[in-house]
Length: 509
Image 1 (cartoon, rainbow, N blue to C red):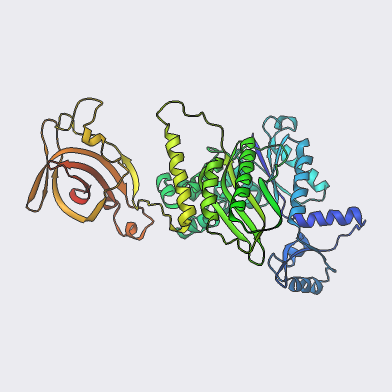
Image 2: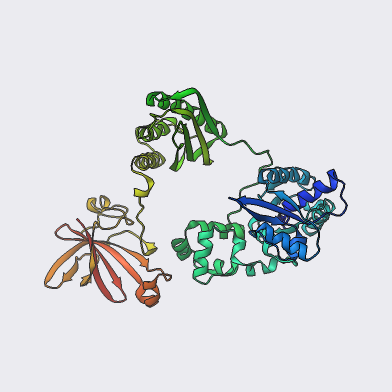
């Protein structure tokens, strides 16, 4: 018994035009229909009806070439309509409301689909397969071409409806092309470059290496496909209007302080609207219409969702100080281009702030630096090696061991495992004997020798197999076990073991 249905409408714009011709103009025989869009002075085919597609007409073709193919085949004079995405989306929302006769949870999947949650409704129609057949018959009665697929997960149903072919079989879902996972264009191309072509091939890849090479977004799409991380639930409420505020001045304003004051008021209104919806802004786009000058546009990308008005004012104030307003500003507008859920949080009562407050403070600092220096100058350092496993500790009974559950002061105050040495060197071969209970260790480099007081590790790093260096190396030599050791002179060094050899690679200085 499947719980999610996806409806794919391959000819939605042309089906709407055909319905309009039948209803308003009373035409029984509908002519070929083409949807056009303009690119400069060129007229391009945006969509075509099924009859036109059979003649070889595709999206992106020049309209004159498409009409020539229709004339050569004696298919008749086509009806050409200009593309209207907003009208098509409104009609899709109306169709979603009409589909509530089958289930109360129906959502749109723009630009050409619907999503249905049929939990608790399938027994009324004799099962999910019969429900899908009833939906298909009802849409045919409306003269709407549709492909209906049922699956245990919404993401799988979406892929089956669009790539499952004429005979949809859930048991063969793994053989669908990689596009069925609904990945971004960059991730799809990156997976294709390493030979991943089907859904099952992507699912069979090791998750640690997959996340390290392609990012967490690919794992989320795979988990959505399998149902481990399902798609967001369908919201049956009508869509809310976008969050945006604006001010239009009576005349051109050339005083920067006045413009900053208006911007501050707009940010207060924006924060209040976000608070009412329990949302936080991730991207805010600002626009100022200037006289005799191009409009000033700027987008603020926050490190984490926020609706803190004081934080937003600080960022925009620093940015506005560099804007030329001598020509005069006629209007100011703010628009939340991307937002996320942000629930209310308990205010800090005690002296010690929670970890989330520390993260928020760091995010505010990064936002200010981006506004002041520009996002192109901000970089996040990442490791070239994949972390396999790691642990901290000292040898029991060694001089650095202060008892169960405790750590020496120098270990506790040292950097965290994921922190890397401040100085890296080319690997140097060394001889190492790690400390054992009751005895010190030993570290020898050429003619120099030190006693090892504390050893923490190992942390296993693996060179990714998809890199050129990783492909050249054997699997055994790709893996390194790193240790942090404290010498008797107080110097922390970073060493690793590869097979049976030890190497020194860095130090904390």
